[in-house]
Length: 142
Image 1 (spheres, rainbow, N blue to C red):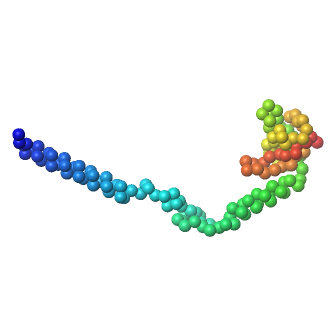
Image 2: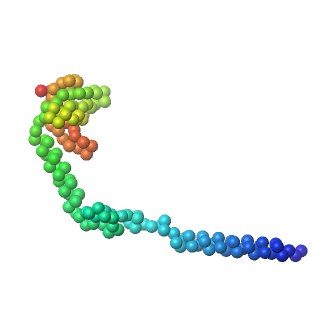
Image 3: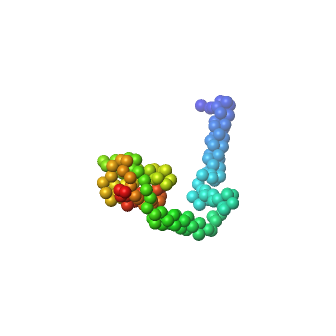
């Protein structure tokens, strides 16, 4: 049996739509920008705060921060500080001391105490800076 004119036109349009759809798929694959490498996606910040695609060569940057951190740590080791034990959780193994000089709460671990402590005890300790903040070491009663 023969196809009617409208069926032939419908089939022609259908074939043309498929061709256009296939062409769009190929264009999407060739023009895809999602497949960038990690290095291409990185953007660097220079010393003045501007964005650039080129990394800045400053090898002393990390060393300077580390050096100042070590200097601060050494300064605190030289002096014993006074404080009062605010809380001490023996079952958890840590507590906090209120520094009399600065008024800040300083963390201490049960391994850093030299004697048995109770809340409200007056203590001497050495303040040590850690990555998370300050920590009291060599804690002893006054």
